Image (cartoon, rainbow, N blue to C red; front, side, top):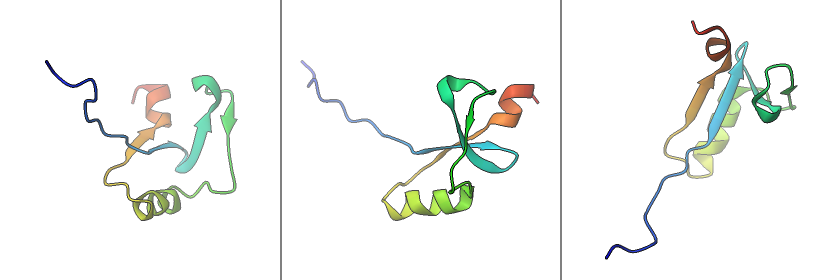
Length: 67
């Protein structure tokens, strides 16, 4: 019988619109949450410094248009 504690990986995510790091409220493109830290590279560096070994980067412009 396998253990109930299966290993898994968590990946920090950075969502991009127009090259800026943002968040969508409930996944809605008309409700973009911006912060003082909209520099995607700075966010990536923070994730690496915190011990991340991978990132999930989402191009929301492409997701919205399908291109």
